[in-house]
Amino acid sequence: MFYLLNLSMPFNKSTQFYYTCLYIVAFAIPLPYSFGSSSVILLCISWLFSANFKTFFKNLGQRKMLWLPIILFVLHGISYFYSTDKQQSLMDLGKKASFVILPIVVGLGPAINKRVLERIFAAFVSSISLLAVFFLLRACIIWLKTHTIEHFFYHTLVADFDANAIYYALYSIFSISILLLHDWTEVKLFKRKPFYYIVVCIQILFLVLLSSKTLLLFFIIIVLPAFIYKRRRKSLLVPQIIVASVLVISLCLLAFTNNPIRVRYVQILKDDNYNAWQSDDPSGKHFSNLTLRLFIWKTALENIKEHDLYWKGCGNGDVQLYQKQKLHVYDSKIDTRYNPYIWQFNLHNQFLQMFMMLGIIGLATFILFIFVPFFYLKAIPEKNIFLLFNASFLFIILQESALQTQAGIIYYLFISSIFWQIFYNSKLSQNA
Image (cartoon, rainbow, N blue to C red):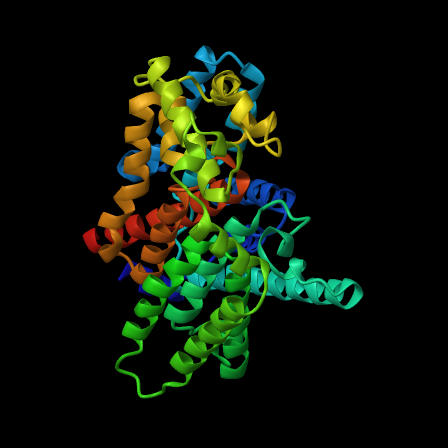
């Protein structure tokens, strides 16, 4: 009720400035990292003018779910003192400052009502749409000059931007979920059907070309059924037909033409993924994306066991140090494309990364941080969109250490903090 009633609430200039900064952050998330960092700083400044410091500690004490990312950051900070590589630890702490900043600045900020949330959604969708058009036009221009198609696919499609194809696929999944499941009321541009259909088609095409196998599967088996279920009672079949047609045509082109995405899938089917990561097998010299992950997970688990890192971990500064030491054992078996810098890779699994860095306490806190939102979805508006947001991120952190990079940190902490802000304000209104 509070969420809906706030539509008519008057906002002072400082609050309006704060909301504008929320839109800027949402738009900046997919852009190069400097834009995201600058937008968060601007949001912090606007929060200082709009925050109610008299009730700050009271609200923080009541909103216990906001404690989890802050506790995680504190555990990272404590691990600095037993990390050998202090410089790496400080760099990691700097990247993860948003674990504290965004839950406070967004989670304890002015109430986010339906109108504000829709504009946040619109800013994010607009950013992804514009970038998708930019990347596709750039690939076309390169094709006209070189007659090669590599720039239409995977990491090469989004080259020269800080985030890689996996993160852009993650952003696209969330953006498409918004487009398909949100009923636009305030942002008139997305209420115009021709424009809306074009944006949906562009974003689905962009998602397919990014060729993230996990997220493409997520889109087919989860996002599409959610969209079809929502539309089941509506007589108009145009949206369903357009979405299905674009997806089918895109997948057919990929399946029956010679392109890098098809090659990647064929490679996975042909690779001996068991032998390729066995330490005693010479074929371990040849890595695919999958076998590289398996190899990194194997060495990380060996480190945890051999160095008894179960309780406190090695510290947020020493993962690379331990991995480098372990990989000396495998020097003769590592693909020369990755040797010697394979040890610099993160662990490509955020749960394993947290376990190795912070031990069982850090892992337990992180598991709560990730899974608790699923139990509160029914209590907020737009629950289906936030469900897909949390589920898609869960899919990704099983194969990527997404919270080791700004591409994942600001994205997840920003949207997650919005989720909890809406939840607690809705709860407050019900108790009033």
